[in-house]
Image (cartoon, rainbow over all chains, first blue to last red):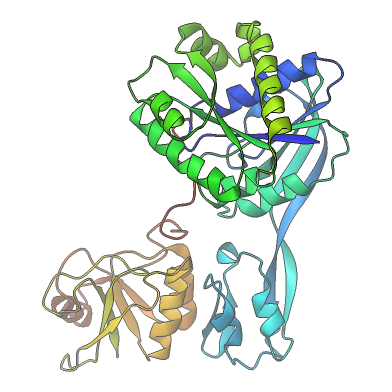
Length: 291
Length: 131
């Protein structure tokens, strides 16, 4: 399976617009089974465009410690080994803070009395189904108030692919830290969507640095071209990043997306443009030796 | 009664710091206000759970009451479990604030007064496109 991720750094640049447009374009070619994985688990919204029937769901848990107070001697080793201060010793008793726990299991492993067992704490769910245009969609939903997005993203990406898709498109969360790394690691190619504003350029640099650290090949899509003066082209030229597409600032696009229409529903000619973009990515990957 | 007051300078006569889990120093003083001890906050740069780490540390120091500007939910639960009094202050020097606590003019926190902090940021989510 070929995996292409869409990320941006800055939020609101058009990641989901691009991910859906690419999925729709490729699925119009009937030989391709396209899966789109919405990894923006704090605010997934690909389903708003593809309107799927979610036929399957799966709970996501992290394992949090539960201390047996009859066995605990209050030695405090659990709190010493916890990197997140999620278990502390007060009045010779271990106290657990589930919302701080990353589920690493260090306290359980290191407890000399075996007084800790791990109990599953549900932090979100995964859902999947088939949406408009015969596109397969899966996404994660983090429970409101839960701070840990990474386990939900990891579980989503590990969920066995019952669709036998040939292409997976991953819609990454915004930012340039752990959730993005979890969403884009081990992909074949990364599309960075940006806009020509100082914010778009600044965050593009950060996202590009993350991709470089991970050794992922990248290409840029400039969205809302004409919105600002930031020199995206110059940055891409200096850093040898191909600019694969430019989408102009266009009121019709903005209005259509706001109604819940996809880019291809607004301008069907983007189907050919995105298929050409995919061809180009395909070529770059064929030519590439290593990452 | 042993008090711990959050501070950015470690000086009992300059303005206190409203940050609890991630203040720079704690000033620890006994009831008589004559032995001021300045300690660096061990949780200042914690990845997460600064509040809970601070409470455990202060409990180990034998602190009975804390004075700060706000307490997140985890810090508050830990203070509650430790049986420590949590005073809320708006402004003042540590010396003035301990005097106020002793005279009964400083209010006690009745529950968490801040949102969960979840570390110092850097958790993705610039979210320009969020509604």
